[in-house]
Length: 318
Figure 1 (cartoon, helix red, strand yellow):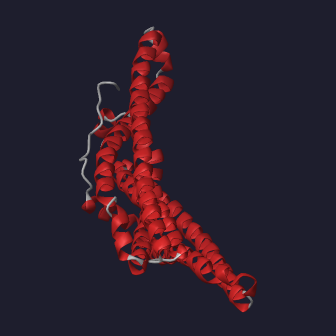
Figure 2 (cartoon, rainbow, N blue to C red):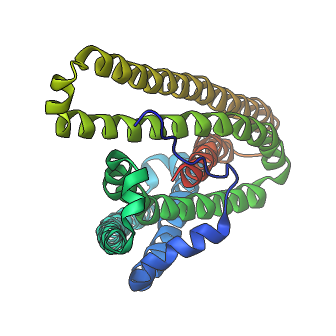
Figure 3 (cartoon, one colour):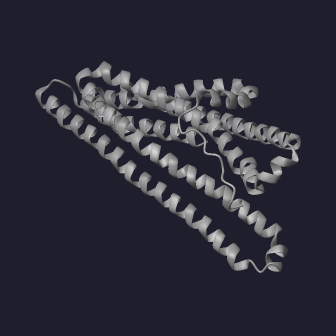
């Protein structure tokens, strides 16, 4: 098994390959369309909440005890949005679960049918562990990606669009200053995600080899004992285990470095919005509610950016 090496696939994002894979989700296209609409609605509600906070700070708090009907209307609108978002999230989780399970079933079914058609030569040169990994964990990974990651990508894109439009409509200069952090963030994300992807591919390959070693160790136990190869087999397995450990630690280390950098950049943008917005509040240029909504948008704006970068890396890995 150690003499066999798994094929290394292209490192760039292959859109044509994913168009082929998305055919597995064709029976669930109505579900996917519904989920995309729900994700857009959910992102819109997420973008509206800071605007409600702005309204409360600028209009409700100054009125003090004279709130009356205005406060009741605000509470009713807020509660309605929470109820709608709760229903949206429930529907999204239900539909995504159906897509995930259905796609995983279809991939495994077609994969098993294909295995029945392959010649004996394929099984002579391909380790059983490789086949088992493809039919189990890798099939599940593809289903998870189609059922969840692609739809998270839709939410991130919608939220960036809605929140960016809201910031530019409120104060375009401050919004432009916040957006200046995006180019260096994109470069850093590309640099780290490329290396994290390489490490995770090494982990996946080592996992396939380890699964094969488990299978051969169990099925060939009698042969191993007959040839007195216990120590040699253990050493070969230790080599594979160390390889997987090294790659896993490298990937975890890169991820541990990448996330604080993203948080630091978003913190710088938040600090600038607080400094510049606070100065404008004192000069009367903007209101306290406006600086509040900008801080809220700035804090949450970079999470979809990080999520989109992670999803694209996951697409490549899958």
